[in-house]
Each structure stands twice: as structure tokens, then as C-alpha cells.
Amino acid sequence: MNKKAIITGATSGIGYATAKLLATNNFDLVITGRRKELLVKLKNELISEFNIKVLDLCFDVRKRPEVVEAILKLKGEWQNIEVLVNNAGLASGLSYIQEGAIDDWEKMIDTNVKGLLYVTKEVAPLMIARNKGHIINISSIAGHEVYEKGNVYCASKHAVSALSKAMRIDLVKHNIKVTDLSPGMAETEFSIVRFHGDKEAAKKVYEGFTPLSAGDIADAILYVITRPPHVCINEMLIMPTAQASATAVNRVKE
Image (cartoon, rainbow, N blue to C red):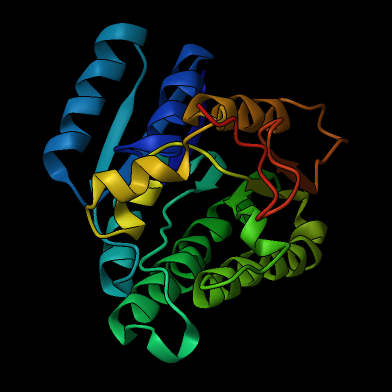
């Protein structure tokens, strides 16, 4: 029987790439996201291309009643979740603290921190019942460093890193692994969302160097979840070769 994994934010970027890669490696998948049409499209692709079992759950991680209702739909073999990839997350806005938009702040905190907590609270008991599991929390270089105008986003990702450490301590007695996986600059929808749909502004973020791809992060996720049972990769920080820190990037001028 295939192992089962749940991936939040599966309709694009890292979540989408991870779903495809895990399907290639014979995982049955629970895919979640807010965009129903994209979820169904991905589900159909995964089933037709890889002949695996797929359950699609459309909900917003920011809304706890929706999270609870969705996870309650995991019946029978779908309760045997071995891997949870807490991928749903975003940056919204790039402003000095005194100029920040409250709506942006709440969106980041509600998604990156509270959403991760809501999903973990519902899925972790399924792992505890089987005395095994692996939780992957997608953090960021922003969970290790701060940078100008990154204030609340950096704070939210520092919270993810702290929560990963705390989860590991709380869950170690239940034989559950927890990995804090932190990418540097990765070209996905991330910057488009951060700049509220401004594709030109987003494009400039990745000019002059080769950023990480969603596939690079999916590769890392596959690596950490396929280690032997006695091995846990607690933390992984992945950077493009051209990036040395949150702000030090070797951009080649044209």
C-alpha cells in the first residue's frame, strides 16, 4: 500500500511541484488549497499520470472551522497520514513597519502561523494514533534573518522555525519527525502575491541570477521524508548559489 501525504497549498509553486514528485514516488495524496478548479485539475492530472489515489480538500487554512471540517473528511485509509507538508504560506506587501498595511499583516500571520497551527492540530493526532509520522514546515531564509521592509513576514517565518523546534520536542515521544525547511529566493508565485499581482515588480526580484525553482524544494522534501526511520533532518536551509544571505545576491549586470 502506498504511503499517504497531505500537502497544503498544492495548487501552485512548491506545493504543486511536491505533489507531482511525491506522486512519481508512489505516494497517495491529499491535496488542499483554496482554488477548487485548480485542485480538481491537479487531482485529475495526478490520477491519470501516476495512477495513485488522490483526495482533494478545498479550504482556507486561515479559517479554523474549514480546516476542522476538511480533516474530518479523512476516513478509513486516508487517516493513515504519514507525511504532512505545511506549505501554504505567503508574503503580502513590502513596507516599512510604520507604513505597513494591517490587512497584509493579518493575512501573513493568519496564513503562515495560525493556518499552520490549525492544520497541524488536526493532523498530528492521526500520526500520534499510529506512533509515526513526519511534519515538514516550509519556512524561509526569513525565518533565520530579517531584512528591510520584511518585518511582519520575517516575524511570521521566525515563528514557523520556533514552532518546528517546539513541535519536535512535543512529538518526539510519539516517534514523529519534524523538519523546518527554509528556502532562499525561489521563483514561484511568491513575489507576484507579495506585490499584489504586479508581475513586473515580481520579475525584477529574480533578475541577474538563477533562483531556486519549486522543483528544487520538492527534491529537498522528498529527500528528508525518505531518510531511514532513525534519521530526522531537523533543519534544512536551501539557497541559490548566487545568494549568500537574505540580502546578499550576486546579480550579473547585462
